[in-house]
Image (cartoon, rainbow, N blue to C red):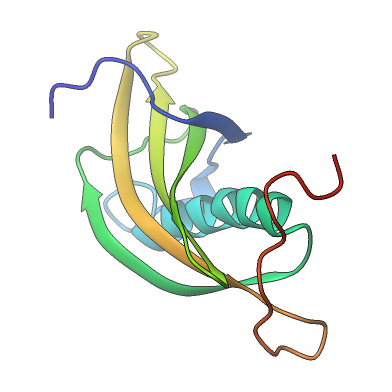
Length: 131
C-alpha cells in the first residue's frame, strides 16, 4: 500500500475507546467494519434518496491496527451503480493520537440495494432527480 492520501469523500469521523478493543489492546475488526458500514450506508442513502440495505462486503483488507484515541476517518466513493444497487469503495484512515501520523488502516468494497419501506428492492432515482 503506497497511497498517501484518502480517496473519496469524508463521511464519518469517530474516536475508539477502550471498550472497543480486543484482549490484545487493538480495536476490534468488527468495530471497524461497523463504522465503515455506517459511512457507506450514509452515502448509499444519499444516492438512493431513501432507505438502503447492505448486501455484500467484498475485498476487505486490514493494513494496520487502530489504537484507542486515534482519530478514525471513513471515506466513501461510489464506483458503480446498477438498476437497484450501489457499490462503493470505503477507506478507513487514522491520525495517530501521539504522533499525528496519517495512514490508511482498512479498505473494502460495499454493495447496497435501494429498498422500499417494506424491504422490497426499488430502482435508483436518476442522478438529477430532486435537484
